[in-house]
Length: 88
Image (tube, rainbow, N blue to C red; front, side, top):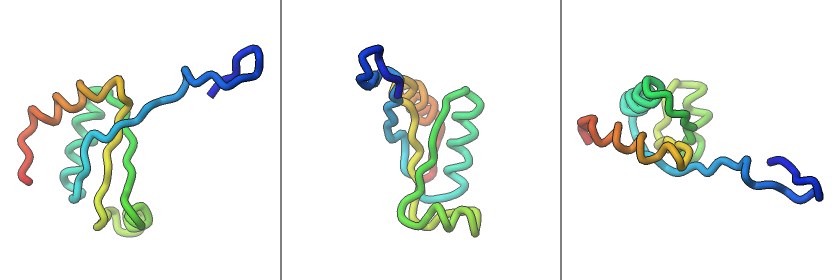
């Protein structure tokens, strides 16, 4: 966050993240990450509970994972996922 001349916080630099999809498997997460990477859509992965520690140790999480994207890219990212056939 930057400051205006008068010292107040300027929130124009803030990024608003929205939930694109919650996933339960490492395979599905890897497919989503690949789709977003191929289309130059930045994302953040957020594990539930102690899932982040599990991902470091075992390479996957049993607690589920959220894929977050910036609000301005959400519609494009959602359209990409909607075109893909998921086996849920």
